[in-house]
Length: 162
Image 1 (tube, helix red, strand yellow):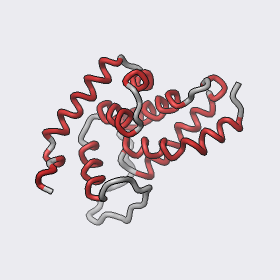
Image 2: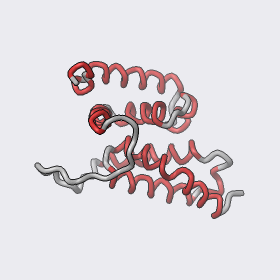
Image 3: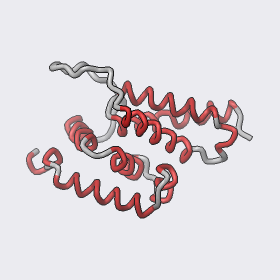
């Protein structure tokens, strides 16, 4: 049986990765923080039933919550001409490369984006991704293949022009 201390340890150890995954799904740090907090709150409600390996369960909550929010097209912010200062955890590669990747991922449908984020940024297997998304491994592989094919022809991803 899992208890509060287990949950607190899990949050301390995994919240950074969950936040990064949420950001890659929704492309906005504030929304990613909300998404991560919501996923962890939902996980807490079921924590005693989660089992010894909660990552798949929590990632599934994260992806399903994001998809639910995306379907509702919940938008309270209005685009502006001037971009505000953005803060967030750094990563590898130049800022231009990260921005290029962010824009390219934004152009993908949510399901394809979820597959690429979970596969390449969270390093999950096809079986783990299928379990999280509630689909077959074949669907995961075909979504990844289609997403990568879209990225190959995406003019924003033309590295030769850089």
